[in-house]
Image (tube, rainbow, N blue to C red; front, side):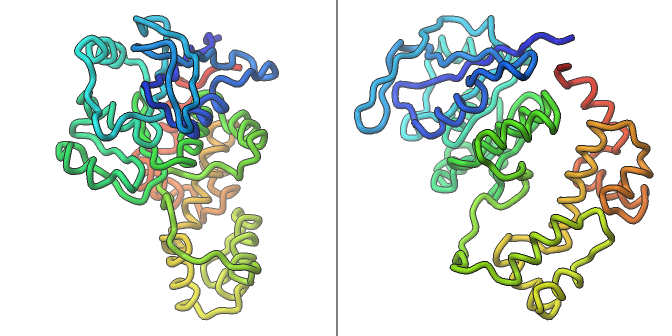
Length: 319
């Protein structure tokens, strides 16, 4: 049985309260009903007191070493001057080179970029900092319109609330869907959103939900059936062409792609939590057959369902 992961939430002298609050709520809140839950501390490598908006002063734990921690969360970083002292750089790079995990929220990606650990990789941050990020770090593949980008050891999230999406994804990878969903429910959140979804949508919110929105709700309730985009368009009382156009405007993706993504989420959950065969999982997640599931799984996740199940069972914290 694996031990609890020890997490450091790293503050800088000018802390973003929202992102810090997200990190604390996700990882530092005591959850005695979840065995081997994270052990988390809010820390600084430069001071024991940090400032935030409205002249709020926060006392944090001052540390000189990251040796006792397994994971580092960077809620934000100074965009105007993202430089890192040689001492901090050395310690953070040693942490990373030991195979330990580092994840950033919002502008925290600037610290990871300064360290060089994002070189040759893809990354994201808040859209308002996108141009600055791309100019300062051309060696990093900046990705627009995603909630977060995640690898096993490193991850970056876009602005503000997408920090929660990355955090829930980390929890799901460590503890599984049931625990991640429990944490999300306690935070009064919707089900976990995949990182490839658009981080913001420039479209007007309807004052009164119409048939279009109810068609999406209906689809979510019937994903395991063999429904298709024509069925959704009929539910919305629209032509297929009109429905496709409205769906792209609202969710920034084709409805067929969205359906596949939702079904993949069901398949991933079944792979993690059940011993069902691939054929059974395909049927229970709405794919025509196991071959079709494998095709979409490899296309989206670059691995087979079997490999995904094996990898997850190796990495998951046993509870």
